[in-house]
Image 1 (spheres, rainbow, N blue to C red):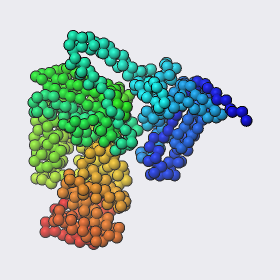
Image 2: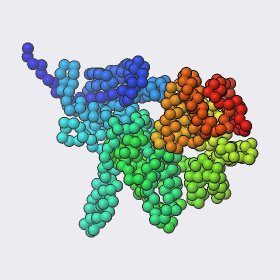
Image 3: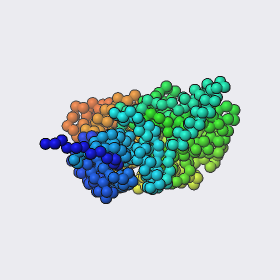
Image 4: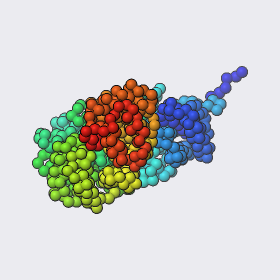
Length: 639
């Protein structure tokens, strides 16, 4: 039989695969198979509608061929939009996202199969795409200009196995406001101009300038998806490292810290971004750490780093945004302004990041910095007061209250200062040292209303009200305010933690689990109390094995609070009783009494009266009785 001849031709190739497919299969095989089967039908239908054909679909991959690049990319956009819409009907952890690569190139056709560099490049592009995203080659890009209502972001050159020359890669921007725009290419052209200018400087002894230029735009070692501590989120993810303080005066450290925090807060209010919490990124403060390590530790693709220097009335800020996965700089800039322009610089940086990552600023407005005030001295008081407040101690809270009060005197229109001042009064009640809890709550409400009058749309204010209402047992109002806070601040780890507590106390443990898990993901170096909240939510949901495991993790932490530790042992006592582990139950009960000798059934019953459905906690009290917790204590305040 004569050997079949291979046919060569130019074609547009679409390669797609499901992100996190292995995890989804591991967690729920049947549900994953149902989802991918439905989504394969979506892909096949769109390919057919756009005059293409599916060549192969092994496992979670789909390979399709088109005669036209326009049809291929139009099909890819429709696929991503339809899958995104269908994902809204699935639980967050069960959503399936596809990465798509499109290339125009030479292929070899053998029967119904296709091979060659054109296919290999499409597969490489697919690997570079984000979950739910599309990447195309330069050859495809050249055929698309002005033909589709999309935008493009140049991602640089990338090597492809078995090809000598790298491939220029573009990301498709599907947001309506990006249509017709090409981002990134101008930066390349401008760098060539800079290089020419700097070469001239070298000719006259400008070696230092050239060195700084190379340092700013140096390649960084790419991060590895395989080494990521967490899977990448399904939207652009970023960690803002603490800015270096280049001023000689250590007393100005708060300026660099506050500047970093403000940018984190402004970015966190953008629902199209996934932003790592401040307390996690600040663990790298003062350390010589590689961008690659930060990316892999925190599970993010983008890292922002910079420095700040105050000299007299001048402020010098250098900043750069790095795509850690590909090892190149998306954007960099330097600012030399007056100190009064501090917040203008923050706004500009926030907007530039949004543009570089191709996401829309909240409500299309200019980025609002939560700490924004025209009074630099007031801002300084608040930045330093926040450090005292997060000690969660009587002395720290009192000092913070004093400094927040100074801030509102300096700027009565400073919403953040009013909000945090209110929190210090609520903390007096929570820490149990207020001489008049009712008076402290009244003060907190009055201060919260002042903050809301200034800025009623900020998530922190709504979460403050949620906790105030919950403390007053106005649970329905607490839930409404908490939901508003999460909707307005989708990246605020602390708000997710606080809302998980409210959900637990209002009889919604499964939702509390989701909130606590999100808090932990947003804050990879989360405090021990996040673990305790997750464990307690598992307990309330009847998932005792998972609760015990998380409580054990909590007890291993060095930063655990004694009060939370006492509660951990009490809930572990109840869980052990229900699991038939009576000996362990008695051991945990003994540990709880060592930490809090005043614990009793009477005091615990009083505490549970603060829940929406206190009767649901009656079985817990029965468990604790069986394990040896006394009915009464000589002094039985709420533990």
